[in-house]
Length: 103
Ligand SMILES: [Zn+2]
Image (cartoon, rainbow, N blue to C red; front, side, top):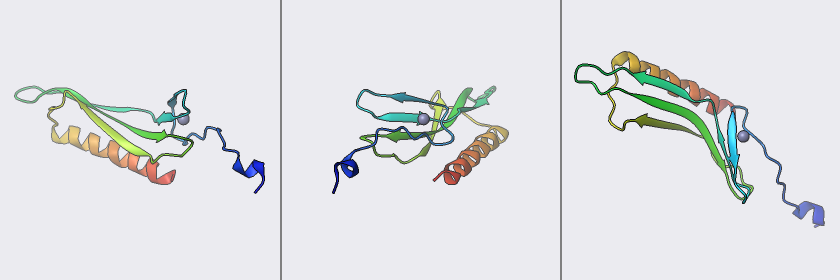
């Protein structure tokens, strides 16, 4: 085996949906896609807030990580109307299609 075959690449390969990423000194990279935010209006007894969704992939030690859909809600216990839930569902399906298209 030649030395060339033992050389580890440090080339960064972003997934096509990557919009920003951070690189640590140890070479690990966290790629993030375009965020989608769904606002929950609240009102009455419903708690207002927002749901944020984006694609993420963490590459560590030169190994490509597994991409995933990240979903967060702020505050933790928001309430969604049916229409808002449909917006979240549409965003999840959209991101799932992007994820499957880039495997
Ligand atoms: Zn990237």
